[in-house]
Length: 137
Image 1: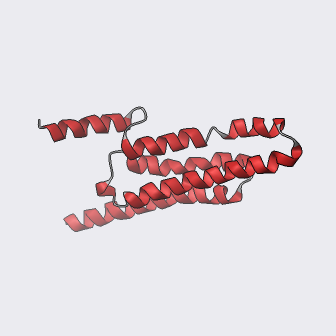
Image 2 (image 1 turned 180 degrees about the vertical axis):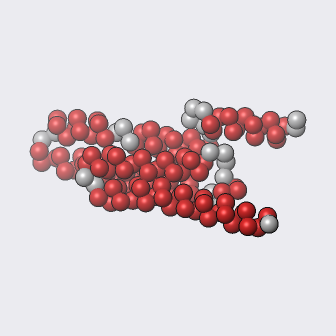
Image 3 (image 1 turned 120 degrees about the horizontal axis):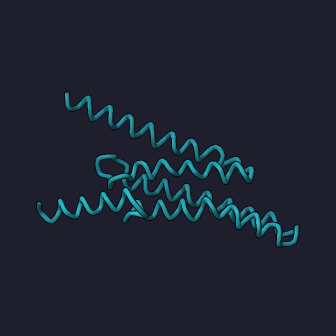
């Protein structure tokens, strides 16, 4: 086994378990930081005066938009499935997880964009796999 094969196996195993490396790590951290942050936001909204509650909510909603834009940026960087690191397609589809915090806050752009994003990633993957199968015939 050469060095590149060993390195690829190590990267695949790291991407499958834990936080992974490279873009997988960035996407997983985005999801792990962005999604559960809704609970501290609720706590902060209880503690701050009523006049600041909307501002706290707007900051978190901007964070959700930023997280989804980060997913779009990684997708644009690795637009072809063949050039993606292992498990990156799965991690890209996890951007649909921002649906739940958006639903909890009643944030309509997130309620619409998060599942649409996951659907978009799935459809592009299916099209590319189908196109690759047809090219091999």
